Structures are given as structure tokens and as C-alpha cells.
Image (cartoon, rainbow, N blue to C red):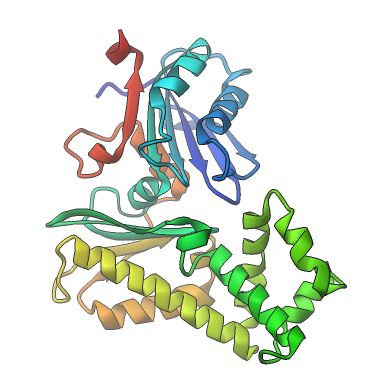
Length: 313
């Protein structure tokens, strides 16, 4: 496809939304916005970010590439967003689930599995049998091993310790710093409109405690078990066998901590001894930017939701 003169790349996650304005390969602007609320309609949130980025940056022939947590075929209204932002110079838009951009940021065109772990978590793989997405099913019925998952299990452990139902843990001390009366904490957290990212914010402290707090260590160990399980499932789903050499990589705040990354690497090396475990080629926004120029023959291209003024005319 013809390379656009300007790309707005948007990475919409449950901890924050980040946007980058690119002129060719030059980054002209980078901004951060409040978290994407997956409990609310996604397209109006996306439109507000596009408008905020472009209102004072007049451009022509702008292509928007957006990867959003919680995106589904039912809520991915690329045409609607294009129409709403046409006055800003937007001529094309590509939407994808954030697993797609995570994969591209990690592996580009290579086959294997890419794990994106932040507030939520999703694994995407491509291989001889096609592609597979594993988890990314949200905080109610999935996201095992994610920041939210670690925070949620940690807060549960803290209240078990408070009640005498569980082992003593330093997580309770951390909770008391935020809520001196811990018995009212659940009311404040449940009423917080950004409760998903708030609960996930405890993950960092729990991971740090895992060096010397037995309960925290068990939680982090279980999280890495879940992440390794998801990677393995995605590889098997796409036709890789244990003796093959798929590429494996990951991105995300949770996996930037060696207390999580090193045990996960060890577990994957044991389960997939011939795999090539790689540092990511780039970050999530780098993967989003690739969406704008993803060729039609790429195995992930069918997963995009696209619209352009040319196709609508």
C-alpha cells in the first residue's frame, strides 16, 4: 500500500492510552491519556484521542492505526471513526486488538508467540497452522498472570491475612498505607471508576515483595506459570511442536521486572528447549505504527478492521 504522509499510532490499554504522531519515520509528538475504559464504548474514547492529537496539528492524508484492549468485531467501527475524524485530515484507519500490535512490536514478520502483559495479558502466535490468540479475556474471566490478576490475588491474600483465614503477608501492610481502615477498602476500590488500573497498581509492590514475602512469592510464581501456559497453548494451537524452533518474545510492564521475566524465561526454556527467546524488536507503539502499512499477505492482516475514504467513495 502507499505509505501515508502522517500516521497517528494509538495504543489503548487499561493503564493508559498512548499516542504518537509520525511524519514518515520521525516522531513529532507523543502523548499519554487516561486509561481506556473497556466497560464503556471504545470508539468515542478513540475519537477523543484522535481529535486531541490532531486539533492543533493540521495534516492531510492522515492514517490512524489503533490497537485497543477489549476490541471485538462488534465494537470495531472503523467507518464510524473515519467519518467522525474526516475533518481532521484522516483518510484511512486500521483498528486491531492490542495482541496484534504486541506481536508486531515483538516479532515483526517472524513466526512464533508474543506475550503482552500489563494490566491485562494476551498471547498471540502465528505458525504452520495459522494464528491463535490465547487469553486477553478481561479481568472477570481471563487475563491470568497480568498486573490486574497479581493485584487482585494479592489484595485477596491481604484480607485473608487480616481475617486470620490466610498466612501473614506484607501485602497487608501496603494495603494499610492506602487504607488505614482496611475493612472499608473494598468499598472505595469498587466505587473507583478506574478500579482496574488501581488494582493492577499493586502488582509492582507484590512483585518486589516476592524476594522475601512467602505469599507474594507464591503469587508471582503462579503468575509465571499462567503466562508460560498461555505461550505454550498458543504455540501448539498454531502447529508448533516441542522440537521446533519458534520465536518467543514479550512486552509489558509486568515482564520488564526480572523477578517475573527470569522465572518465565526458565519455564519456557524447559518446556520449549529449541525455541529462540528474543528481546522485542520494539515497544507496543512501534507495533501499532506497523499496522498502518501491514501488507495484505501478512498472516495477521485478516484480523484488522479497516476503512478508507478511497474504499468508501
